[in-house]
Image (cartoon, rainbow, N blue to C red; front, side, top):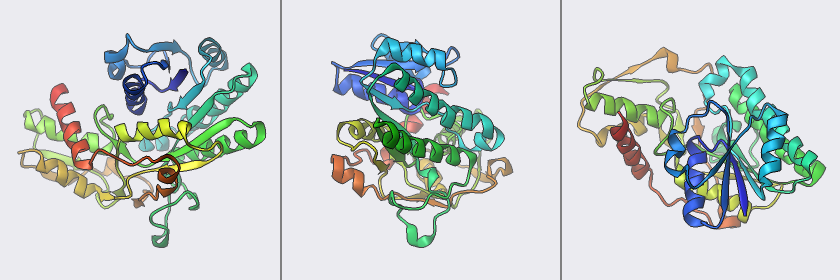
Length: 318
């Protein structure tokens, strides 16, 4: 089997490649990269994967990658995935996420390929949720509260539309927050962990800068998340959408407290106005029973272990 991972050099993409290489060594793993893609996350597996240069915004390069690889499965993970950046660059976020996905689908159709395709959506699509809608099931209304979230709703609905219109085998996943080693330092758990490690090594003053500490999030370890991505194309139904999450939410304050418990530093906590969003989702809590029943998936790595691994990751790199 030949699979193509868009965004293979990113956080989830690199972990998905790790998972496939370990669990299914007979599978050929191809990844699409741009000329400026950082290779840090895949440096350890460069001899085991095949990288192809292409860009979601460039149809010529997309068709060449797909024509060369002839993938039987596509895991579409490439995206502008940082919510705050979407406020600063909403058009670029849409260009990469929504228009880029249209280009991918159209290239697949033009080439007459028939791969199974997984679309990595986001719990941010749910947005404004009322108390009686928690935990959120796939049937919950989508009320996105950021340009990023709207772009992900676009990806989600395009996946459904191309399934209905062209019979493409597309499975949509709505992953709730995921974390673990290699998470970019702009994302909350990783940002806190890196700040703590810098304080441990006397590289900064003992002050942790934070944003909205009351928001609650459902965190899954990335290694559990990518296993779910694989299962979505193994056992998920074409045209369906599935939540992926643990069903437990922690406030951002609780996350920071748990990380600090794993360190000996004594810190002050200060709110940084730059870390506050124009509008924020107050709670994201998954009902993933549909996916669990369909595939048998369940998270295996405790959140405390994810945080420990994240701290250790930064201790090796700072």
